[in-house]
Image 1 (spheres, helix red, strand yellow):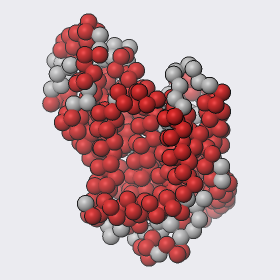
Image 2 (cartoon, rainbow, N blue to C red):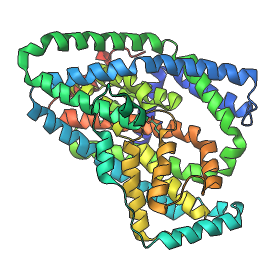
Image 3 (cartoon, rainbow, N blue to C red):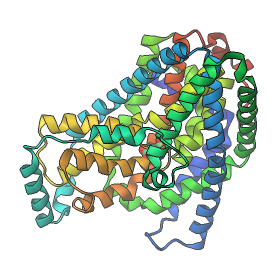
Length: 451
Ligand code: ASP
């Protein structure tokens, strides 16, 4: 318990360094609760909030593509040879998979224990509920079939200039395709030795410039984060939050377990990193993640915090963090496993142990194919419902609408967790490779500004 207080105090100190962002968050929550609005009835005040918030997200997103491209090329090229890339890549994937697996186990256990969907069963139309139950019962015999070869094919890059291929691709698969191309080209640049200098120097300049733009953007972070928080809390409204308090509390409890137990235990087991120092180093990234609900938009700040404060070498940051911002979504996986069980409980569907395992596995896959943008996890949730319960979004419409109504606020929390775990994994990989400067992490005097 003592450690948890230390962690909260550390985050408190991190907040103090940039208290105006924290005030923007709290102010946004208060204003949002005081001035709620019903869907389709936003006032001019709400529209202004949305305008400022979206403007902030747009300028931040402007730098994500150049940042990811330059970071991965420079990161991989500076790792030297492909064997080194492979070794670090394997470690990264193993940590990301482990952290997501733990999240899913926590989410599933809490959902089964607290049964957040039970209360909603009377609110669901009885006929609809019966139809859904009959359908699930009839399909229980069939084991789920996910078309694995088609999934793998959709992730392979192919010819980027082919207009037909472009038309059939989904945003999530495009991101995967782009990452795979970048990794392959990064390895190629690494293996051609000195000849890569012109290209690598070019991308080093691009990377440095995007980090400079990040510093400028952070000047307007306070109004941006205030507006986003106020607008989305106002949109959710106190009544929805109140109605769904058990569902929301179970998700928040799970996310806090990740933050206060899972990460500290992993850091203790696999490194000598003090969790309080790490959290203090990345508090700005946590706050921006909360405000924007986007891991990708937070990426520049996550990189800045990890490099300038956490003492993680820039090659590890440039490789592990951009991939984490798109692939590592443990907070999302935790939310998805709870949400699917919530739906099953709301419709009084009996879940067999096999179905529960399937929900967990699908949550791991679906979360890692979610883009690092707001509500991405809500979209891929439909895949899990389809894969495990064989139900479409229309069939479970009543429960989906409830989940949708409160999603943005929960998205803020799960994005905070997604971003924190990216930094935790980057620091674990760096510690294992001798790429983490412990003295630097411990000594706040030498930390550099992020905002
Ligand atoms: N908003 C989340 C992120 O960017 C993804 C999600 O769960 O919707 O990390």
